[in-house]
Length: 420
Ligand SMILES: [Fe+2]
Image 1 (cartoon, rainbow, N blue to C red):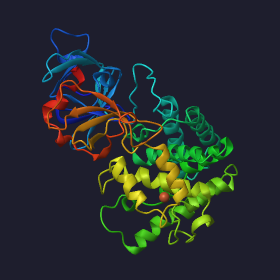
Image 2 (tube, helix red, strand yellow; image 1 turned 135 degrees about the horizontal axis):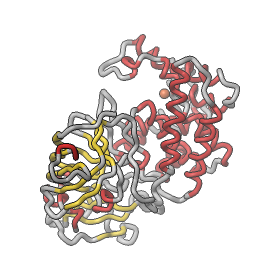
Image 3 (tube, rainbow, N blue to C red; image 1 turned 180 degrees about the vertical axis):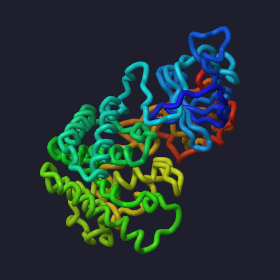
Image 4 (cartoon, protein in one colour; image 1 turned 90 degrees about the horizontal axis):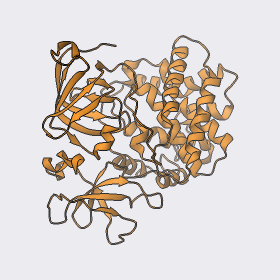
């Protein structure tokens, strides 16, 4: 880990580890060693801070991720805001600023939030388990199946704790290496879909485990082909397609993975209408666990930044998946997915049918299209100082037309939202 000297970084996005919560035009860092009068802590100044949520979302954090426009990641540890009076110069202190190297930000307090699905400690443990799995495979060793089963059990326990929660998909996302997070995200998504389909706990456990391992065959494929920016040659594409069989073989090296778990690795690229790989199965020939994992896999891939394209917002990704129902995806499983996931997670900007623009602040378990929102811009185009909170479940004449962009609001409207 590299502790940094004085520096200024510009065009900074601020992440909590799960969600982006704001931006600042520049972040200036002065370590304590270079301060004459204040040796007790290093200091920073954020210029032009804009928060997407209330200030609490920022203040309760212990650590923050800072990401620059050119995708450098920093970790600001144990920070305190000391002066927020002037939005152009928000000042604070922190223990250190480091180049991010796999650490995970902590939160200051436990947040009672029905939409947080996986307990943070379990998420971190899952990273450690996957890290061990990956290094064992790379070194030709057997996977530690009991550690993987143990974390799968915890995922299932966490998810079944709140069966009715609509899941904020942004909470599932994290910003570490794709190889680590993709498998964990897919496992979480798959279990939630499985739960909605009424699977029992033993089935959910096998689903969690298989979904976590679904792509491990890719570890046997050169990274430059996996991440290739541009059209794959036929032989490269065939190599990538071989990850289904490779994954099955890797899991078969251990006696501890049931066939139903290994099948997920083998079948997650089969398509409902046929023409998938490796065996061109269709419909019910594809195991239920594989059909579930296929949707979770595609959704997570679409909503994650990859070297060759930017992430789609949840709404666009779900629309894209919906356009492939019957050909690619099983309709019953897809319906269960839509029922459980908010199309407009907390933090989304939306256009309402009365021409106003609002910020989603809470999903609604009874209707994924009718969350609670805070109206930021009135129907006649005025940025509102006093922002009304509207539960769309109670306002039947009001509904969401679609996502809105940050540009649909003037800069100043978001800038001091956290102070109002
Ligand atoms: Fe795959």
